[in-house]
Image (tube, rainbow, N blue to C red):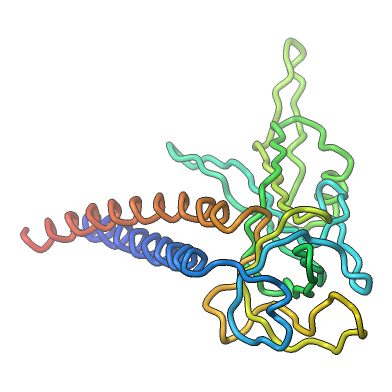
Length: 259
């Protein structure tokens, strides 16, 4: 009796989680497609939610940050380290470490520029992944990262059986996503008053960032529609899997009730 109840609870919990997350992603897509990007010049003195596009360039004061796996100088990055682990008949990628960092940068649409504060942003950049098989020596930068990071260990051990050598450990995946200087950028965020700019400067008196007045804060390295497509693919998959899990959980719960 306990097992069917447990199955029902597990599937209902997974289904509810996926539906909530998928719904949140679809909400983000809705806000992205609801309006069109505006000229950066129109942000002078403007407050509230805005969409802008342009070229991402470095702020002279904030400079850049160094991405952890490639060593690239960039404006914003996220990273994730996963390990492929098996438990009985089930195998999956487990996240060991992840993080995000960035500096204020400038969006230039060709006519005017505005400063963007990326703190708290939902970033949607193209990913670059390196998958390392067990028993393989890590590249220098990845090895340095693993050495100084608690909870992440190199999987490069092996056992020499004379006639053959068996690699020990698990497969690892290192994923990095970056907004590089000079890339196209799309930003949906809140326009706020910024520091006064010099007379004749094409930098508007505003900052775009996170805030209570904006429903979402997204920074992407593609267009408005490209950003929406990038998000909606995962959102639809999560919503479908969530519905399936809910149906399985509901069926299991109903079988318990009818017994």
